[in-house]
Image (cartoon, rainbow, N blue to C red; front, side, top):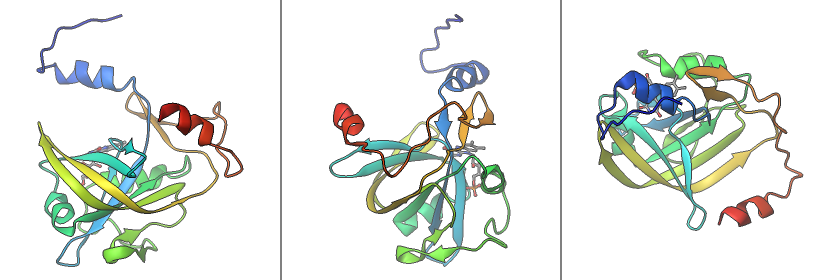
Length: 183
Ligand SMILES: Cc1cc2nc3c(=O)[nH]c(=O)nc-3n(C[C@H](O)[C@H](O)[C@H](O)COP(=O)(O)O)c2cc1C
């Protein structure tokens, strides 16, 4: 076990190494700015925050080109990617004039672009933003959700992975017991 005193100023590599031990899913978060421009990025900072009311959170680097668009739009959609969707993750993590070019999308509430074929989706209204360090934290109130059966894309130690060893969640499952235990 490597142990380091950092006091809020960790060596970036050590911090990334430690954070990379925390496996996450991968999402693409989209919005439509007031000028009509579609914005989207790959994000693994997404997390559940509250069940009642239904709140989720994620954070965006303050230097991100999409920041002004997300703030002004006042809403966003979170798409949870499937294990087969590393291409979508690459696409939305790579700067481009139009990351949506050639993709079939439909407009959700407020014209927010929705990507088809994902594992789950949360359409949210921005409840609050909090500037924290070099990121802006978005807290979203979930207005609409969708989910399908299937295997999620996993990001761990800076690499994509597939949870072959995990049990695939099914809509037949009764998740009440699990969430009840957390609540
Ligand atoms: C797996 C993965 C997770 C990421 N998570 C985040 C994140 O949570 N927040 C963020 O600001 N950038 C994150 N990024 C980087 C952005 O996707 C990338 O910088 C993107 O180009 C920013 O979009 P923009 O320049 O259009 O705003 C992540 C990248 C990858 C590959």
